[in-house]
Amino acid sequence: MMTIWQDLDSSNNKATQIVEQIRLHIEQQQLKPGEKLPPQRQLAERLAVTVGTISRAYAQAELQGLIESKTGSGSYVKSPTNYQQQWGSLKGNNQHIELWQNTAFTQARAQQLVPLLQSYAQAGEQLDQLLDNDHSQNLVAQRESVCAWLNQSSSCFKPEQRFF
Image 1 (cartoon, rainbow, N blue to C red):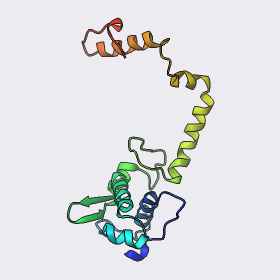
Image 2: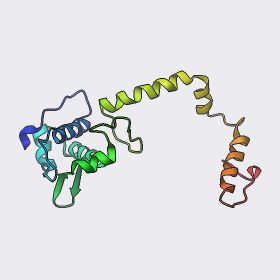
Image 3: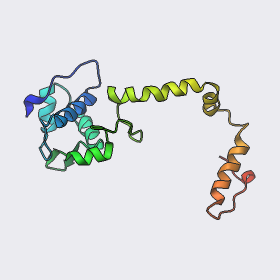
């Protein structure tokens, strides 16, 4: 199995490259569900990176549902249905982007964000108003809105009594 690991490009995030290699090897069925991944030290030596880099890569791959780690036993490839259901990223649903995780974006995922960022850029003044740190003009309206929402749960909140 060690022969499937390709050397890493020094210009990109190495942990992300390793995750992409894992994803690619799974797609190409070079890594099969339940197959054990190399121990972190062995893979670090093979790819000439630190064990920390491999640890970060395995953690990212686990967050993405590609692998699962079992304490004392190692890391294993998850079944395709598990990570496809969780991420919907390998086949078909390319609209699904997880933003709840603090992980590096792959090039493919970054390209999916381009239209979103372009729409933000075109929003101009409206976006500036939303991002403006001077909230003094909208503070009363915001307090009223939050209190109205809180009052739906049978609480009694008055905007003038709240500071947000």
